Every structure is written in C-alpha cells, then in structure tokens.
Image (cartoon, rainbow, N blue to C red; front, side):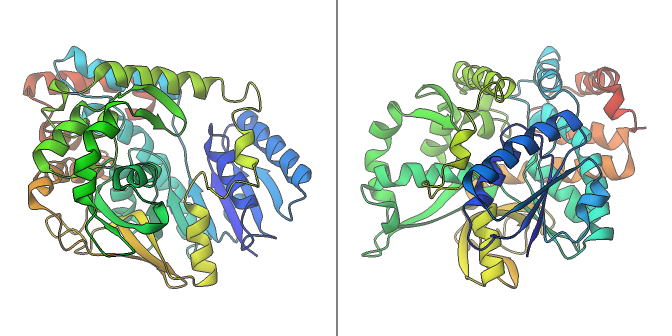
Length: 438
C-alpha cells in the first residue's frame, strides 16, 4: 500500500483537492494519506473534513495528521509539496506593489519579475529543508511540487538535490483540454496535442485530429477570434470578466503564431513589453476574486464539497493519474511536467527546468523531446535562464549580491540604482524571511 504525504495539507484548496482525487482512485485504495502542516489549526481543519468525507463515502483509506515532518515522511512513497511562507497575500501585495514604486513595470508579481524573485527568496529555503529531510528519510519517494514560483523552486531543488525524483506539476495545461474541442470543432477524445516551454510561459506546439492525422492549427486560427472574444477566463474556478487577461495572450499569438497555454497574469511576468499591452483590469479582478475565495474557502462546504463528488471522473490535480501510471505500469503520456531539460527543448540550457510532456510508467517519468520548438519563442524563454540560475545561486550562497544580479538580469528591470534601492527596502520589509542574505 502507498503512503502519500501532503506537505502543506492545510493550504486552501490543495489538501482537500488531493484527498478527494485519491478517494476516486482504485489503484490507491487501501493507501495511507498523511496530512502535514506546521500550522496545527489549519491542519486540524483539513483533517476533520477529510475524515468526515472518508466516513461518509466509506473509503478504505487511512488518514493521519501530524505537525512533525520527519514523522510524516517515514516510509513515504509519494510526497506532495504545496506551501507558502508567512501571510501569503500581505507578502504578495509587497512583491507586486513595491517594485512599481521603483519604476519597475512588472505584471502580477507572483512568479516572474522582482516580485517573483522575492517570492523565491522566501519560499525556496524551506522547500530545500523539506527536500533534505526527504533525501534522508525516504530517498526513493516521488516528490511533486505544486508551490510557486515553479521555475525557480524546481531549478534550486534539482541543483541542490539532483538525485531526488523531483517533478513540478501545474494545471494550466488544463486550459487546452477545455479550449481545443471548441477551437477544433471536435471531441477532446479526437485530439492529440503537445505543448511546452517554461512553467506559466508555454505554447501549444502541435494539435492534431486523431481520426485523420490532420493539423488542427488551421481550425484553431479560423475560430480563434470568435472563441476568445467572449471567453470567461477561469483559473481553478476563479472567474474574471468576459474576455479578461488576454492582452499579452493576443500579442504573443499574433506575433509568434502559437497559442499560449495561459493568460496575462502569468505570461506577462516574463517579458519587458508585457506591461504595455496587459489587461490590468482583468488581472486585478482575478486577483481580488482569488483572494476573496481563498480567505473564505472554509466558511461553508459548498466550495470544497465538489472535490468529493465520486460521480465526477475529473481530477483536481494530475497527481493521481501519474501515480496510477507508475504503480500499474500504464505507459501514459502526461501533457505537462516540470523537469530538468535534457535536450527536450534544445534552445534552452540543460540545467533549466522545462515544462514538457512526458511518458510515465513503472520506470518513472521520462520527458519527451520537442524537436520542432520555435527558436523565435525560445528567444523569450532564454531571457529567463540567467534570472533563474542567479536566483538559485543567491539562495544556495545566501548572497545578497547574487540577488541583486538576478534583478539586473531580469528583462523588466531598467534602472540599476532603483534595483539596489528596491532590494535593500524589500530585505528590510521582509527581514523575517530575507535576513539570511548577506
């Protein structure tokens, strides 16, 4: 039987979403779910709800909860990480808004730009501590990271612990499963597609009809405008205004001729011209909706009860299908995993963690080479490689100077003097988390 450890189980949405997914799996019947969080109140809340639905649904799953990470990890088969540091939204507001005061025209401030750097500098150290424990206690476990900033976390971990079975998972790829049937005017079961790039900065490379092998892009281009002009943007059930967050999205589609996987709040964090075309109103509307939903998530069961709908065959996260493929040797193709580049995208360095499709079976997770990756879009991806590498160096070396260089390498930073002032003030404002930089 499998021992599945959820690290950050008290997190809004994540813990209960994964528990509900595991309940749907026949392969994981009889497994033990270990809920772990450093916040005992949040942990207890998730545990009580999970136990209630286990008993209600009569599931043959053991559920445990502990604030001791080392205890949780003993004998683990799979470890899932979804953590944040400190007060998420207060710190996010600083990440997003403080750089704006120094003339840095960044978008959103969660994963890219200076905001993404500060977020990374806070969250990577504790994730490295978690991975150090995993390497010591359960080194053969598969480790799935759901925390952001995905690109920088995964690079730091795979640099520090190259032998861990460490994979980043993000559900932005689900947008293709929602959008392509309408764009290609066929059932999802008749579509095969591949996408890739960096997390939150990825494009659809190929889409084909299974029944005749024809290219789906002509249909996508024919239907593109009509479909997206009224589309409600939906991130994990957080709905923005109709047509929202499509300024950078449209520009990348028009100029690079590929369909982006996600929208402005993600795409816009990585390119210097994004601020001039981004749908800032749509981004703010999404952020406000997301914040409100997170802060009120446990006020009633109507938001999380859908996770435990056993009549639904959809999964909240992709962990369960991947785990089933490993356990049962199913040999499936997973649309999107984050793993170190091994010539999967040949225009990017080998150490950078790329988001690519993969073959999964009992031997593990093997990325698929995207031989047709366009060097045009790859030129945008390469603007991030130095930023990612320098962020890892800043954390591992505890180097304020390397953090400063990471700012200077970022394409959205245009002032040397302001970069230095911003870094100093952010270290002061977030001293509790960034004081290790010297």
